[in-house]
Image (tube, rainbow, N blue to C red; front, top):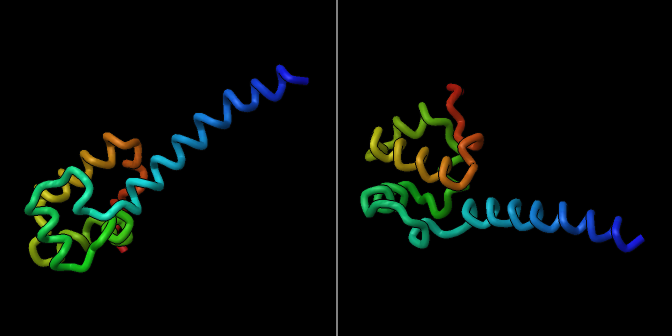
Length: 94
């Protein structure tokens, strides 16, 4: 019985930690994330407080936001890729 419980814990504890880390970066204030000052200024101008706020918009709409540049898009994309969250970036137009 113990071995089954240990096996389950070996699988689900790392998975829980991984999921918790993903949620954490999405809800962390942008000023606490390693982003350029330019990105943080643009985000502040649009009242984006977290990555989750930014990711509510598809890329084509973000690019229409005043001050959101292709450089900001690439920075966002790289950050998401580094944190295994690239799938959250909405690339299809509304």
